[in-house]
Image (tube, rainbow, N blue to C red; front, side):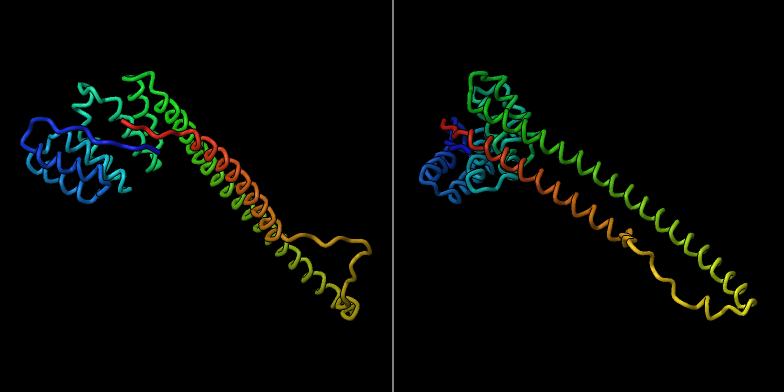
Length: 244
């Protein structure tokens, strides 16, 4: 998503550790660089260079949670920093990797406010906004789906209850008819099985109808997810690396 470089150490007591970390960073020895920057922070926890470069190192190591913490530690000094646009850009990239799209959109926006001509930030901002929109739509559709499922279940329960009530009434009527026919000595005729009418179609049970509905809904959801994934991949391919 991007290539990061370190910033030089200022004239502070931590400069020796930061410079050593910068050398390890250039060698792509991320673990050694992390140790060097953390040593610098032990001596001066407010070191801009140590926090910033540690965030870059952790990003390269794939630890987005800790990288974001290092960047966040610089929020108070970011507005007065000459590299503020790059800091917010990196914050946006780390948030994107963590799929925190709202934070990514906010960070890229801050970066563009300080450097409106940064095309990389613009493209990443557009991408993050699209992903945020998709995420919000998914959350909304998920909520609607849950409501629909609850309503379907309620309708099914009501239908089952009605069927049970009808069955109870039918059984009661059948018992009464049997009693009357027994009194008329027509027991044999009453007990003979009733033949189905010719051409009568078998009925679909409520359970089978519910299963068919769920299968259709799952297929529709699968199709929607496939379309969104293809769209996201197309947007992602537009991202560029940022060297500075």
